[in-house]
Image 1 (spheres, rainbow, N blue to C red):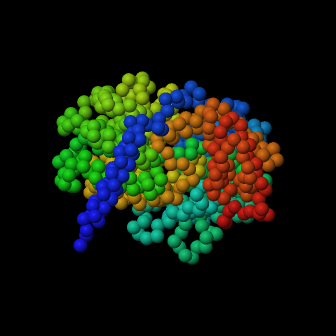
Image 2: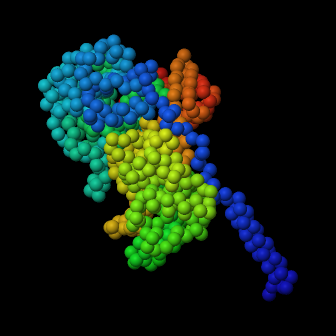
Image 3: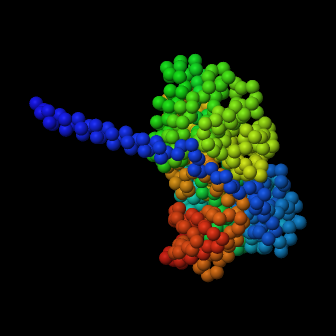
Length: 599
């Protein structure tokens, strides 16, 4: 039996604990300045200061026409790497003297008849400038022109076409190590969205292979796998060949950067250093699709968003240390249902602040009388009782209404600094939409996995250190198929985030407004570097901070001034440069010999 004194002691202890918990919660709420966006900056870099390469920059030669998809990829890669691109639709117009001065000569076999120019291409090879066949002509043309076979190092054509079952990219080429994409069972074959067929080329001595087509035929040894990307040492000149459609909008940037690295003693190039996880049309602060949502989940969309969806996203954020950016839509059916809940908006702002996230605006409309009217309505709702700066925005697709409103500086969008969306096939992944608003392209959709998507993620990180993965909650709120419902959707998202993010931790996880600052620094950056003995001196202009990747072949960084260095993997470093001049000191490799190819 408990005595009166003991009972009173227990009660006092319980009251003390209760008070302490309540007191800490009050302090936590008071100190949570949820109505401020710490990532949004008022003083931003603008498009007028964007760097444009000129003839004094490192030069890339492109042989082919500007109408092809390969050219668009090369142009974007040159813009990001701050190089001057010179195009020749007729290779004979390129003098051997200018060829010798170029950093790379890139050849588009889809828009250039390389067979007819094969003799002149052989002469250009004497310039000792690395040449890259961005794609190959058809097998018949390679058979007919011995000079092409010799330059490419092809010794045998076993098949004109064969099924492409899988792809292996060897270690030391793309960042992130070896990558193998091969279905292990019948169910996984749906993930293989590479080209269906490929020629079967065998290369000879003096060649080095970076990627092959994998085969399930156990009778074929690995050394005989069809080559996809390889290098031939042709009379002292490196000749690269890409036998698959990899120099495209999805993967071309990464493979060009990897080829550049493998052809040189070292490479230093700028990167964004930002990985974003964005959630569109979320959180839900108004009643949406009420009848359908209640039919599926037996609750309305507001309670579903807060009690079911939000705990899962908090778990993802903390598990992977991701800064979520949520793009709130005030309501597709605002006029027909009800006003957005101020209490819910305050709740989510507080919650996002606690997990270092950010709230942005959705620019999408559906059941509303017009885009301009919806944007004015949103601005009134969001700015009514809060000073929170909604500087990031999302659009399912950039249309003329949105781009015109941004270009004309519509008052309802005046605080927006960046737009996240799916890029058009002719647009760049990162750009300025007007003088003050940037565009950040989506690189992956979280619930859609394929081999090409995973390879794309790796290529984007290799080339520019940037990715944006979208979780599209519009699918869940307005489900068209059973697979769009949360119980299925969330499983796909969790699985794919583990694939895309857990394996790619080389670069920072950022909120969109945070990455917006880095995108501006990346686009505006002007830099030069030089090497004397084991010291690389980097000089930058137009930005106070910048990020670079340095890749070497065995050399290690021993010291750096005005820079922070982080080892990404063996022979690859992420360098954060402060100020306008930095020095990077290298040590010689302890290895006597390093072989960087498997075959």
